Image (cartoon, one colour):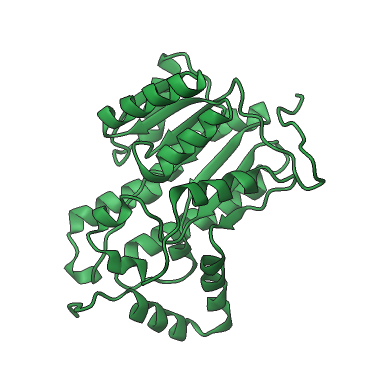
Length: 281
């Protein structure tokens, strides 16, 4: 099958051609998901926007359709439910949509000492941050591989590069997403499908409103959604994309500096950085 990529200047670039294709984006009602939608619509991609907040999805869909003359479908769905990938794939098929690319962005974090967290909230966190990523990837990766084009982006985090006290479940979930996605990258290398784990650091989104505290940012300078998504799309446009990318120079330094110290030292250091000002112990 001929490639749907068109070359740009420079030997290391082989940009993805999204024109006339359809990208499914989860968590698209705000933050990184909405920014992916804006960027990909500008590059000519039709969209399927998925999140719980239908009113926000419809508003964004109307805006992008008017601005870029692309088709935008809205699916309001709770992705923490069991079997969400199959349900989503069935709904897409029912609407007669062929999905060419997938961005798994939906997720949230909890913040605080693990023994004080609400068990139900933790179950929802694992369901959305881990199981939904697996479920949706499994539901769509077969057709994506067979077409030999498009992208699969799973949003991980720099929190996945080390244990994160006070965000123990979130850090572990993102470590799973990172490892899982890099494995899919290797499995898909010969197919033409570009697979990428995107690891942002602290970003100016609704994430910290959901978490309930900006202490979770560990005092680091926040990036914008635009910066993070630009990093992802630039990585995907390379002739030989890497399995993962970290957005932001300081985030890359922090992620890889942990390799130079013992795990005992790293987890103690992260605890000091991420602890609430008056944490309960």
